[in-house]
Amino acid sequence: MVVSKSVTKGLLVHLGCDVTTVSSIDEFLHVISQEHKVVFMDVCMPGIDGYELAARIHEKFTKRHERPVLVALTGNIDKMTKENCMRVGMDGVILKPVSVDKMRSVLSELLEHRVLFEAM
Image (tube, rainbow, N blue to C red):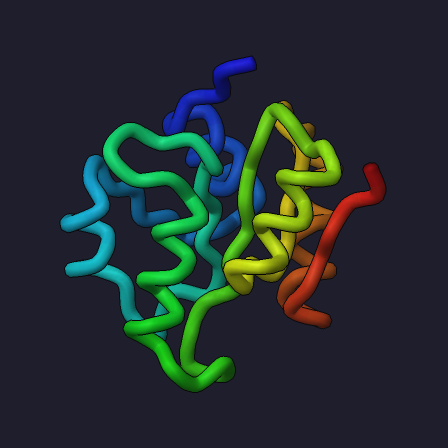
């Protein structure tokens, strides 16, 4: 299932979040800062996958408390996907599509505990 960046942004804005969206990895790496609390990324993206992006974020923010919480949004939450997300240091992985109530719950959990891996 394809869930567009604009749909995810709309959902987060509806929940009262300040949202920054980008069109490329280079743009993302340029604008990301300590002010960003959570990064939602698809595992499958053109040019670079979410696993490589997570590794680059870890390189940029070497201290855990400085980097944003990293969450994969994916249409496939099989065991391998979950293990790969954990291996590269993502803090969570959630299955698309995400409802408003689910996103509210996810944000609350992530900001409180900095980790969320849905049951398979």
